[in-house]
Amino acid sequence: MKKIILTGDRPTGRLHLGHFVGSLRRRVELQNSGEFDKIFIMIADAQALTDNADNPEKVRQNIIEVALDYLSCGIDPARSTIFVQSYVTELCELAFYYMNLVTVARLQRNPTVKTEIKMRGFSEEVADGDTTQRKGIPVGFFTYPISQASDITAFKATTVPVGEDQEPMIEQTREIVHKFNSVYGQTLVEPQILLPENRACLRLPGTDGKAKMSKSLGNCIYLSDTEKEVKQKVMGMYTDPNHLRIEDPGQVEGNCVFTYLDAFCRPEHFEKYLPEYESLDAMKEHYRRGGLGDVKCKKLLIAILNEMLEPIRERRKYWEQNIEQVYRILEEGSKTARAAAAETLNDVRNAMKINYFDDRELIAAQAEQYKQQSK
Ligand code: TRP
Image (cartoon, rainbow, N blue to C red; front, side, top):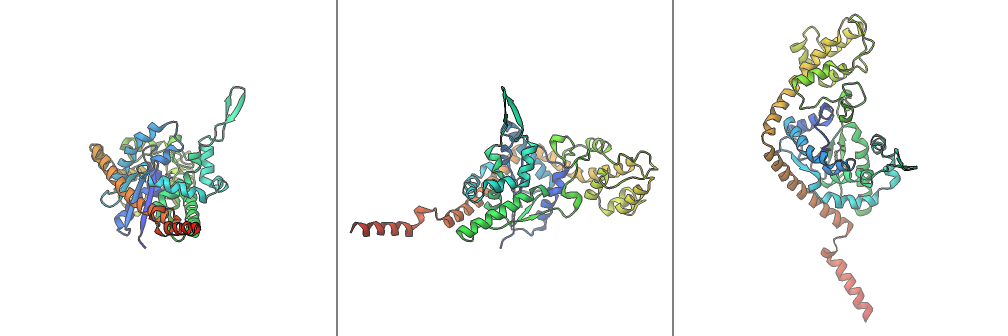
C-alpha cells in the first residue's frame, strides 16, 4: 500500500513554536526522508470559517501567512503538495455522505469539540432584551470533525502528523472509515496518527506557563519573530516563582524555560553555548540544587531558538518578496489535490452505487422488469 501523508493547519494567524514542535518540524523531516509516496499539506480555510464566521477576512489574510511559514520551514513544493481546502470542493461532497454515518451524540462526545465549544463561548448565555439566549453552536462548527474525516480520507492518507489535540479527530475519522467500509465494502483507508515523540513537544506551553501556546492568550513565539522579539519573550518567560535568589533551589517541572529546553535543546548545544554542562540533565541538576540563575538558562534558550529560527527567517524573507509565486504554488497544489480527491470520490460513489448513469446493470434490470410487467 502507498504511504501517504495528509495534514494541515487553520489559517487564523502565523504559525508559532507550538506548531513547529507539534507537527511542522516532523513534516519536513518526513518529507526529506523520502519514505512517503505522496505528501499533502492543507491550509484549512473552510474549517477556519467554522468558528470564524464573524471574521472571514482574518482567514483570507492568513492563508498567505501559513503558506509563507510552511515554505520557510522547508516544506518543498516540489516534494509536497501545499493546497487550499476550499478549492477541493470534492471534500464537501464526501462530508455530506459521511454525515449519515455519525450520530449527534458521538459528535457531542468528541473532546476537542467539547473544549472548543467552551473556549469559543458557543454555550454562553447572552442577554436579548428581557430574556437570555444561548449564543448557540454553528452547525458547520459542530460537524467539522466529519469534514476533517473527508480531508484525511479523500487523499487515502495512511499517516497524519499532528499535535495531540487532534487525536479525537483521527479517532473519529477511523470510526467513519470502519463504518463506511462495513456498509459499502472496502473502499477507504484507515489513517494512523503520528504524534511527537518528546513529551515537551506534545503540548508546548505558552511563554506565560499556561497550558498551550495560543494566539488569543498572547503567549506565543512566532516562527517569524525577530531575534529581538525572541529575546524579549524569553526574558519575560515564566519560570519558578519561588526561585528568587540564585542560591535558592529551583524547580524544573512546570518551569517553562526547561520545558522549552526539553523541546529544542540538543547535546551539541552545550558544547557550543554552555560547555560547563555536559547535558541538559546536568544543568537541571544544578538548578534544582540552587546556584544557577534564570537569566543564564534563558540566555541558552535564546541562543538555541535564534540559531534554529535564523534559516527560517532567511527563507521567509525570500518568499515574502515573491508573493505572487507563492499564490501560484497554492493554485497548482490545489489542482493536484483536487485531482487526487476526485479519484477517491469516484471510488466512494461507485461503492455507494450512486453512479446510476454508469450502472448498465441497474438500468437493464429495471428496463427488463417493466417490460415483463407490461406483458
Ligand atoms: N484541525 C486542524 C487544526 O485545527 C486542521 C485540519 C483540518 C487538519 N483538516 C485536517 C489536520 C486534516 C490534519 C488533518 O489545526
